[in-house]
Length: 155
Image 1 (cartoon, rainbow, N blue to C red):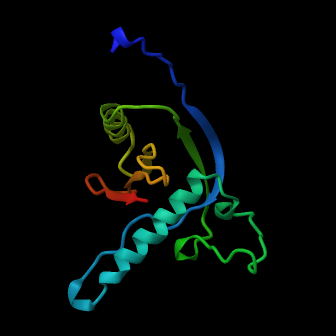
Image 2 (image 1 turned 120 degrees about the vertical axis):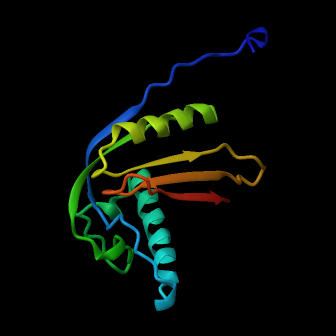
Image 3 (image 1 turned 90 degrees about the horizontal axis):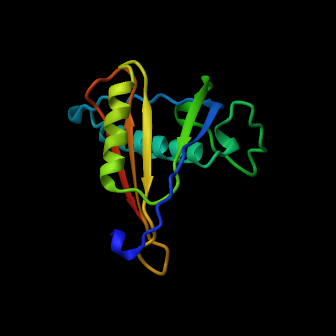
């Protein structure tokens, strides 16, 4: 690549601390096929991905102090959560290799205590004129050591 005169840019993370949010239950429901609860996990996955997306967008809808008129927005965190907490959000923006994203995931897994949770989202560049992209989000729920939830969304 050096022969093609690449521009090398160092990208520093942007860290936002003390973000006030209502945290929903992040542990998936246990499914029991005999009891007909297959939709419980699907509902959990959809609602949790929506909540994680709102956090990544800095939406005020996840803030415990949000008092927007319900006529304008009927959003409430999954499970009707009223558990307020503070988050730390670290953001990198730029062109990164899949190997870099993999190393970030491995380092986050090694650094996070089993009782804590984290989520990593990776968004690709548009591959078509219509703006279609692929997003990948991984959630490590709290109090688990080897369980993860993966969303791969193509638009």
